[in-house]
Image 1 (tube, rainbow, N blue to C red):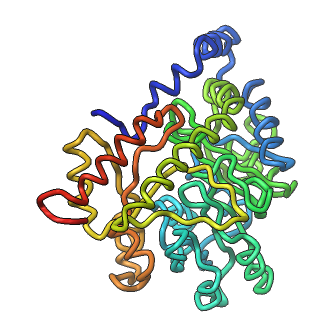
Image 2 (image 1 turned 30 degrees about the vertical axis):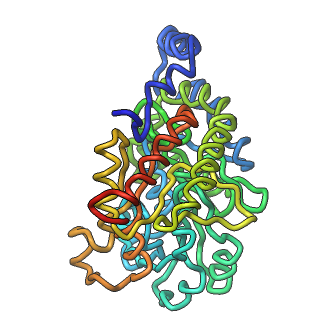
Length: 373
C-alpha cells in the first residue's frame, strides 16, 4: 500500500523512547486498575477540555451509555441522535432501553441540523446527542437553544473530536456531559479500547464513578447496580504521553486538510467538506463526496491509496434498526451523503507528499478511460 488510510506504527515511532519507558513505569509500579496513572490522566484531560471532571471508563460506547444511565434515561424515553453518525451513538441509546430518534443533517457539514430537531420532539423525548462528526463541532448554540426551550438534556458524543473548538471552547465542555472514545485510531488513541466522560456536573460525575465499578464507593459495597468499565493504568499512561502531543498532531492534521482543500477544489467532480468560521475542526476524518464513489475508490486502490467509507449503511438502515420502522428515504440528506462520501488518508504522520499522491490519483481518476467521476 503506497498511502495507508492510517499508520498506527508511525504514531508509536513518534513517541520515541518515552513509549517503552512509560510501559516499564506502569509494570514496575505493579498496580494496573484505577491507580495513579488514571487519576493523573483524568485531571489532565479535564483541564484540557476545560471542565471539572473526567472519569475514565472502558470505551467510548460505555461512556455514552453511562451518561444516559447517570441522567435517568431508560425504557420509554426517546433520545434525538444525528442520522449521520457511527452506529455506536444509536446503540448506546438502545443499550439503556431508550429509543434513538434519528434527525437529518446539514449536507454541508454532515452534522445534526438544528432546524429539523423540533419536528422530532415528542412528550417522550428526554435528550439530544450532538456528534462533532469527523472532528467538526456541530452548531452547538442553536442545538442548545432547542434543548433549553423544550427542557431537554444535551450531551456530546465527542468520540472523533479531541481538541476541536466551537467558538473558542473545546469539545468535552459544550454540553451537560460528553463521551470520548480513545479507540486506537482516534486523534487521542490508546492501545485498545478506552473512553472517558467529561462534565461540569458534580452529581453526574459522582454517579458515573459509581457506575463504572460495580456501584462501589467503598469496595464490595454496591450502592447502585453498576458495571465493570474501568480505564486501566497502562492505557491511561499511554494517553498521558499522547495528550502532550495532541495539539501538535492536530496541527499536522490541519496542514494535511489544507493541502487537500486547496488542491481538490480544482476538481469540480469532487465535493469538499465545509466548516463554518466559528469552529476549529481536528480532521479525524477527511471525507469528500463523488457521484461515482465506487469507481473512484477502485481507482485509488489500484494506485495504492487506501480509503474507507463512513458510514454506509447508516444506523437506521442496518438490520439492527430496520425493525423499529426505519426505511430508505426516511432521512434523505444523510442517505445521500452516505452514498457518496469517501474518506481519504488522514493522520498526523501522513506526509504532504503522500497527500499529493492522493490528490494526483483523484485527478487521474477524473480523466480515466472508464469515465469521469
